Amino acid sequence: MNKIEKCYYRLFYRFSYKMRVRIARKLGVRFAANEGEERCNILTNPFAVFGSEPYLIRLGKHVEITKEVKFITHDGGLWVLHDDPDFSDYDFFGPITVGDNVFFGNGAIILPGVTIGDNCVIGAGAIVTKDIPSNSVVAGIPAKVLGDINGYKEKVKRNGTMKTNKLSAKEKEIAIKREHPEWFEV
Image (cartoon, rainbow, N blue to C red; front, side):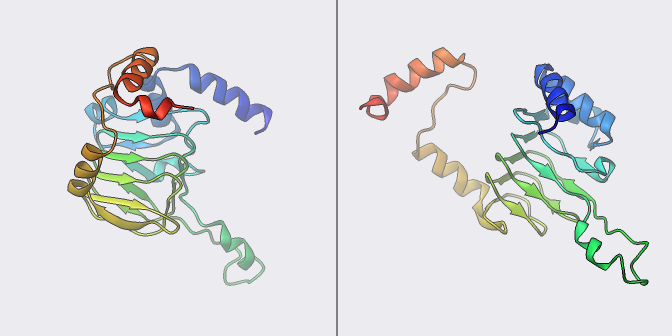
């Protein structure tokens, strides 16, 4: 990370999630509606990357973008064709459209021309190369549909789900230790 990126990161990290959404809007990222941005969350450390054409990205309502998610709106591979007179002046672009109620896990990469439907979970490290239908859970390289949102609900109910979302970090630790002491055994 160069000095400018470090400075930007430090500033970006200190802002509230609402301010980070406003910054994304100023970069050119489009949101479904003004009320849609109120329910979006862009996490930092390091921040999400909106590519060199952020104006080609449209986010729906209630979207969470976690650490190191990258939206890539162009294909730099055309570089190898720039010596060909038929391609010397061309670039390749594609918009990225994200529906409502979508979660992006850490390090996910979304490629040009992709549309992600409503109610989707994009797994950590996934590389999304094609459209994702609504109500899907996807992961992998390239990302593949692993199941639907209803199956995901059932899975999280069975595996370690706790009502800790509104607790402080310390309160959360205490609650987890109380519920699952075996996770802390040495």
